[in-house]
Amino acid sequence: MPLPATHIYYAHQGLGDTLPQAFLSGTVANDLRYVAGLPREATHTLFTKTLDDWDQVFARLDQESGWSREDQQFYLGMCYHMFVDRWWRDQMYIFPDPQAETGNILKVLDEQWYLKKIRPTRLLYSAGLTDRMYMQLAHKLWIFDWYLTLPGKKLLAQVGFIALGKVKPWRLLGFVQEWKRIQSISRDRFEWLHTEASIQEALSESVIQKLTTYL
Image (cartoon, rainbow, N blue to C red; front, side):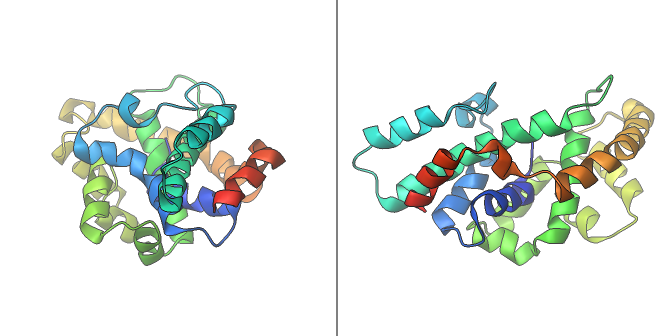
């Protein structure tokens, strides 16, 4: 599923350039489960099979009358994260014969693209992430600071995957082949996703209106 920069990008694309920090913090909070060692089910409870769970989202807000404005915004950010996960998966998981590493390779390639669009300082601080927190999360999510900032270092990344135990040494050849395959197949798809697709098209006007009343 998408990684932090991608989530922040789609938050702005769907809901505008000016968003409260509590909402942006919520959009990346779900994946801090990697740092905490929590299962996906603990932080991803909605939009697992459909994009139509917004009624449940707003019903929960109505029940929690004691929440502050920031609590509401943070909760909506977490829900938006889950919505983006489902939407992104529907757009990107189109590859024949996926391998064990396919999803993670897709996420890293996508995150690279978005980090070029969002300055790292904006990525970190607009969502309330400290440098240390982001790097902890990044390493858990297969992102390496030196890989994202040094072009042409794919071999280093592949060695890094092995060093961190993400890919077993005897699977390196298959991993490299899958990396190249996904890069080749996904190039046009990424271009379409980044330049033509809009997440706003997956959000109804009524949902956007309800969300903006809290933001």
